[in-house]
Image (cartoon, rainbow, N blue to C red; front, side):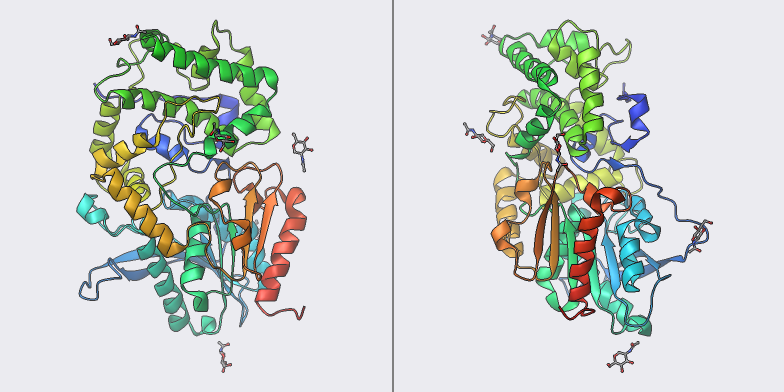
Length: 491
Ligand SMILES: *[C@@H]1O[C@H](CO)[C@@H](O)[C@H](O)[C@H]1NC(C)=O
Ligand SMILES: *[C@@H]1O[C@H](CO)[C@@H](O)[C@H](O)[C@H]1NC(C)=O
Ligand SMILES: *[C@@H]1O[C@H](CO)[C@@H](O)[C@H](O)[C@H]1NC(C)=O
Ligand SMILES: *[C@@H]1O[C@H](CO)[C@@H](O)[C@H](O)[C@H]1NC(C)=O
Ligand SMILES: *[C@@H]1O[C@H](CO)[C@@H](O)[C@H](O)[C@H]1NC(C)=O
């Protein structure tokens, strides 16, 4: 009895931005914490000067005895390159769905940068994702080499390889550009190998992985407040009603109205209830991340105009849960999701392969999991960091203690929110839910810059050519900094 319900938000809306909200597995929900962003053309124009390349990388850079290799794919666009021009790397915002990043080879801010400085654009794909398959079988044993540190070594080797195999790049400086995970990677790389990097532009980097982060949910709340009092009250009341129903053993009402396949709680006890909250909170999270007035207006319009008796039903409506027609039902059990994901994610080429691998990556290295924080937000208190620890435990065998230790060690090695990076331009949207996870202001080195982009959430400021009127001045400042780092100006 396995089938998927496709929850569609609002059709006129889905075409204009990409929010990966279509499938209902835990993995999808984790992925929703990633990047909804404006739609961009992913195809490389036929006439472009983009070329595809492969580099042989060690599976394990840290074991000199292990000579096993895999092929990492990367793309190059050298249309602007002139002798002594820089190598400009675009590091993709998430390791998965690498294909999306191709856009940056032929348009957008990275392309502009290359044009301005006569640079070559290099876009490497991340190990384990896209075509850069390390192992087809995604066993826990085989996933061990999916770590940030291995990815940093891949990049160092690629730089070495580019310079030594193509004499045009022998003297080229290296500029790294990235947002979200790509920005984190740029920061960690530049800190570890300052001799290999001339400058970085890091947008919305998340720097202190841990099992749960308390702050983001409060930023989501603040964004929702901008939708007006009435809209905010509806969300607040809806979540209060959810809490009341669970407190009064009335979850059967929810089950009936939303046509859930399973009772709440079910085989995973309170985690089934946490899963419910995860779903409900994440929809607001996703909107807060792509926030600007236009989208929030649409969300609030939907919330306020849908004909419902109770506030909580309007929230279910946002997720497409209200009145799912029988015999369809929404598979709301943690158990079901685990089975589903383990069945469809266990090989690199399977439907959930990348998502499964990425979840491993989050449990092992890049832990940025939303939770209810201290319970004082409108979203209530029943969505704890233990939920994700549970997922990491069931899927990959991590214990909470082990994860805590792993993240502590990771943050010690990489500097947490206080990395030491010279020649960096850090940008972060004012409304970004993870703003408390970016670099601390007083840790910004004197050669570097930190700039908050007003009224923006997730890194839209990096898409300079998409929002060119808004960001021309910021772009000018960033380019001026890079010009200085490249030694192209005296002041
Ligand atoms: C490719 O074609 C488009 C549209 O004809 C043109 O605008 C663009 O400059 C061309 N690009 C290259 C690299 O020739
Ligand atoms: C690189 O720098 C060296 C030393 O300045 C110079 O001799 C050489 O021509 C340069 N190579 C390129 C490709 O610019
Ligand atoms: C809800 O059900 C549980 C277990 O069936 C019971 O222990 C608890 O007292 C009930 N709570 C209320 C408010 O009825
Ligand atoms: C809960 O967290 C928020 C955001 O971090 C903070 O503003 C608030 O004071 C905290 N409340 C309590 C009771 O700790
Ligand atoms: C940010 O958005 C608010 C609310 O929409 C608006 O009042 C304010 O003028 C905006 N600020 C900037 C700097 O655009």
